[in-house]
Image (tube, rainbow, N blue to C red):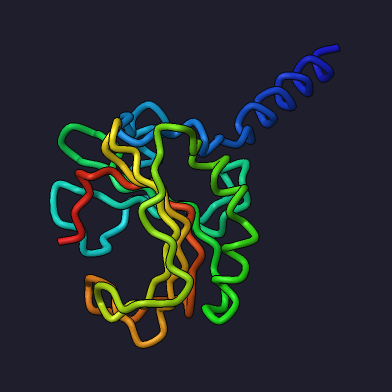
Length: 185
C-alpha cells in the first residue's frame, strides 16, 4: 500500500513538473515575473548586446506548447515589463518568404490580430536592416496599445549580431510582438 501511494505521488509530481507553458499567455507590456521564476530568468538570460536595462531571454528548451526552435523574450530589468516576444523557426532564407506567406493565419492567431490592428508593412522581398541583416516583414501595428505584431523573415548570411559575432543560423522565420519601448541600441 505504501509503495502504491509513493508511486502515485511520484507520478503526480512528475506530471505537474512537465506541464508546458503556453506562450500565448505571455503578453506584451506584462510582467516577466508572472510567467517565469527568478531561477528560470537567470537560466535563460543571455547577453546579446541589448542596451541596459533591457535583458534578453533565449529559451531553446521545449517548455512551451508551441514547437518554436527558440523563444526570445526581451524585458526591462528595472520595472520587469516585457518589451518583445518572439517565436523563432530556423530555416533557409531562400524558402522563408514562401513559407511565411503560408503561415500568415497561424501568425494572426499567435498575435491575436483583430480590429485594433492596422497593416503597416507587406514586404515581399528582402531589404538590408541593422547589422547587415536582410529582412522581409509583414507587420501590423496596434496604436491603441503601442506595439507591433510582425511575421518576419531574416537572412543572416553576411550579417553580424550586436555583439559583433556572426549569427549562428543562416535564416529565421519569426513571429514577433514588439513594444514601442523596445530599443536595439
